[in-house]
Length: 254
Image (cartoon, rainbow, N blue to C red; front, side, top):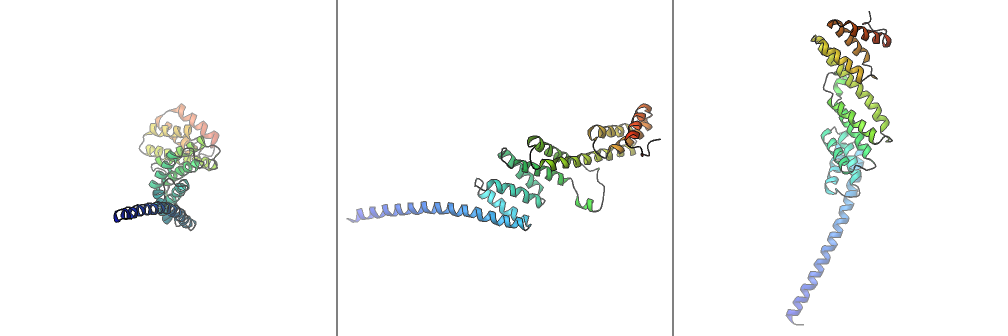
């Protein structure tokens, strides 16, 4: 073989060898990547098991970014929702929930994501320090409670057989009482300002929209006092009759 042909043969062999190495390297990288996802996920699960949700969230987020379509992707996102929730990262929790629901509307665990949306919004309306100090802040903005109520109602309507439906219903009752207390707080504010028409309307609103809450008695009492100040005898008497029938111990009955 002359020098020219020997050089060409050497080049062909070299190219074939390089091609083979490149293909093998690619396969190996894919294997390592898959092993890496599993290993990372096990690490995240260990962190969750010991309550280190910040570390778990960081690891799960890395998996979600690096392996968005892997076999673990759905479970990673569900665990990421819970980890973000446990760290108090509400914005990331809601963003992850909304993405999961949007991309997986028929997933077997979509009811869990919907339930966690309600929980996350409900938690935003709670204040640990106010609870510890027994401070009544029923007059604060209840918009997050309203969102949570809609989240739970959406869950129950779309997935009535969900394992989270019973708890969601109980939470909706608690939220209704929270919203009713807000209306009572506003009505009392109007009473102090001598805006009796507005106060009476708030009381009536509670009767019409939250009849199954403990706020019915104060709502009726506000209506009695407001109608009395307005000189609306018939409306006052009707409110007194309802109050006497349901709450005969009320000091507003005279």
